[in-house]
Image (cartoon, rainbow, N blue to C red; front, side, top):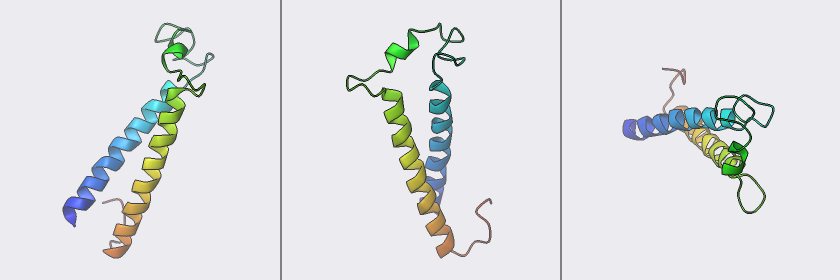
Length: 89
């Protein structure tokens, strides 16, 4: 059970960091990343466009958010079952 909780916690942390990075990369043309800022300007929007019209980075954000939700629910369920007082330990 401890190995499963460790694996869930680790994947939760990785998902959180990945979701933060993806959301920061989603800044539009007026943002720092997508505008005339860090990565060179307007050409960066063309990299993440999918052929279907919905940007690849938006699909990735939805996927990561779903993974985050599922892992959060699993962690909550496991912590209720083992009667730990606090999730932050």
